[in-house]
Image (cartoon, rainbow, N blue to C red; front, side, top):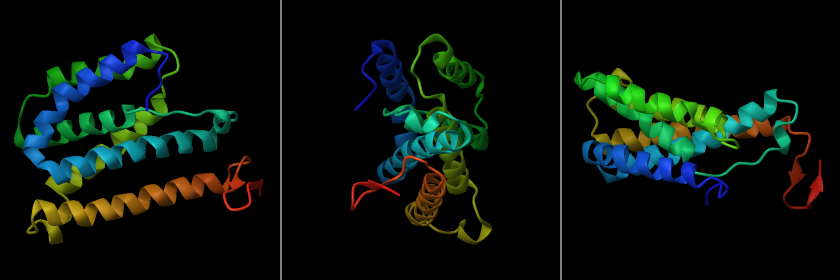
Length: 177
């Protein structure tokens, strides 16, 4: 699913995924890359929830799309490139263009961009640096350990934000509570 009103937005997302995704997947492997993408996408949703918590009309806003996950890939490639000493200036320009998209194109959830960026960056940092005690573990093991922890944090953030949602609906009863 994606916000269908802007073909440019979808095209930019696909171009970004085509440029950044294969590089990261080759560097990380399939499972860590998939974990990064999914966690970043969920981080984008958490970014929307945090914004809704602090915004007066935020609870009446819906969003769906891949932007949060893609911004997680951006952050991840920054972390990895910085770690291995690759010049990141061209990547910073590409990211700046994408960060400016909400100014140029309406109805883009910049909050999801930020949420995905933070989660992707933290997850990548944990995988490449992380806790000293886990540095000897394989990438697959670190992915599982850090992935479960990150998922738990994201779920906790979403639940905590939703506790303040004035529009909460009991999923079992279909009633507001």
